[in-house]
Amino acid sequence: MTLRFASLAAALCILAPQAHATQAYPDKPVRIIVPWTPGQATDVAARAAGEKLAAALGQPFIVENRAGAGGTIGATVVAKSEADGYTLLAGSSGSVTVNPLLMKSGFSPSDLEPAGLVAKVPYVLVTSSDFPAKTAQELIDLLRKSPEKYTFASSGNGSIGHLTAEVFMDSAGIKAQHIPYKGSAAALTDVLSGQVSFMWDSVASVAPHVKSGRARAYAVSSAQRSASMPDVPVLAEVSEIKGFDMVAWVGLMAPKGTPEDRLERINQALLESLRASDVAKQFVTLGIDPYPASRQEARKVLAAENQRVSEMIQRLGITPQ
Image 1 (cartoon, helix red, strand yellow):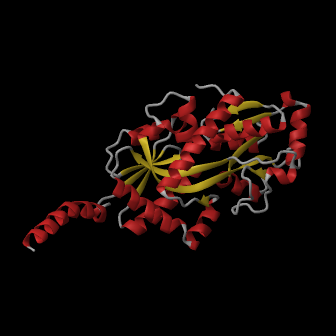
Image 2 (cartoon, rainbow, N blue to C red; image 1 turned 60 degrees about the vertical axis):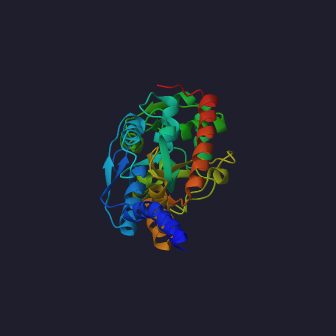
Image 3 (spheres, rainbow, N blue to C red; image 1 turned 120 degrees about the vertical axis):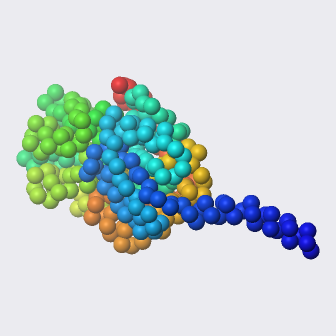
């Protein structure tokens, strides 16, 4: 009996620090590094997630913008941070999937571990309100007839908007000149003024301009209509292009080696928050769709996206910077 008690006591002593570590985390503010400028879709999703995590876990989740180099500057900061769960990356298709394939960076996606997914971000095909095409098919026909006359903008070479536009044009067998910008705000400004013909940008960015009448929205990039812009059709409804599905993801990531119990704690808090009906309604108003996923599911999504995007880049001939 004494030996059994001693064995049980020893086992509890071993388990106690692990249980304490889980319960104690987080015991101070957590940083969420957003590798883009404020107001972009990743930033919007990160701030919404940070609010919910703070409420669920009892510590502030402070968003810090570290923009530059296609999101790789902020991602590198997180990848090289201490793996303790107190520095997270608001990772996205652009910063974690696309840009490491197209530019030199100080990190590899394998340096990061997903804590969970946060949102799906559909993109919208837009022009200025006075652009001559009234539908997506009319836009395709114009580009097919006079490709040298038209241009498209993006937030940078290799950005999701750039890749979406290239896949769109490849699907229709059309061409236009690419004009990359340093950020989507400047790109959208020139599209709205008519200096550039069209672009694909996030729902969050374009919705206010569509509502005000400055922009015309032709189609969303997803396979289904977006709850954030339910009146905007998918390409298959209004053009010859079928099966088009280009949706960006946003997720929270931590440096490789971050304790599993801390990542699971974040993941469980995310799952509970993202499945709440009020969060779904809030995300719709922000132009993003909730994307609850376990860590295992998140790993599968990221691996599949990396494979798909790598094949797209090779097929489309998009060259590294």
